[in-house]
Image (cartoon, rainbow, N blue to C red; front, top):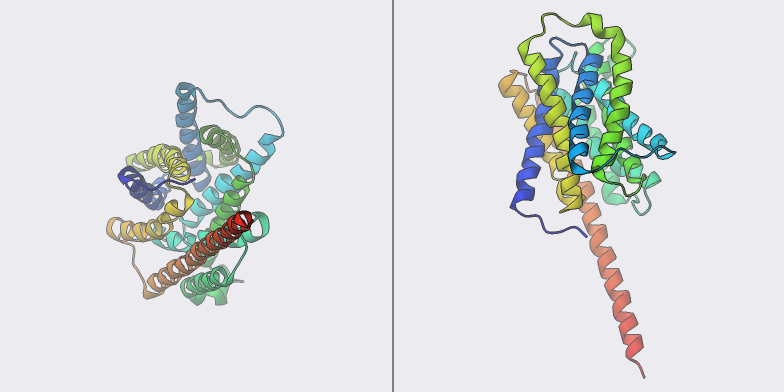
Length: 319
């Protein structure tokens, strides 16, 4: 049962906003010296190293050998390997703020996928309306480039890669719910172990493309991406999920893209077009409408349960 959020929970929520929102900036800095696949491999390896140390001192262990690793591998592919590589490649060609805006649609993907794969998470009018509004926001952002879909417009393909990354993240989130109850540190470490091995193998052909000498800001960015944006953020994420719960954590969906846009504009001097800002507004409004539908569904469910309970009590009191 989720508890009421306290002041520490709010501090963690805003910390996650900063960590995840600035990850796009640090991706941009890392790409100045490293190819995309190498950025991802180094990021996951650094994060894995941190979590293995945490395992050592917490008394937890990696998942035992068995069929469970197949599910962990699937979550690693959908939640880390594929989206990390897509985002890193996309940010070679489009601004970090634009990438963040397109990634903001992820919660709407989650709601849609949950309808098919998570029991009790059915689509309703609010969720459909929210997704439609979010999709309209995406079209506002990428619409001017859609006419060149079949050409070599690399910026359009980069935007589509960011949208595909958001879909992959969403699928990974939905599949993670189906794994069952496990120690969060154990599950995170297993996921990052698979991710580090696979991304390391993918990065080997690109090692010769590293720009030597490596720029100090690129090396620092890799360290921050691994330690803070991946390892530490995962721990804080599970703390909020197990404390005040996913509903409280969902607030971050509004804060991260806004923070990423602000950071990109101030630090990287990235331009902000009216289409990008308008698209972001539509996407965030769509998320708000979808979550309003979830809240309303919970209220209706509680009232229905209360009526059933009241009826049962009344029946039991009859002579």
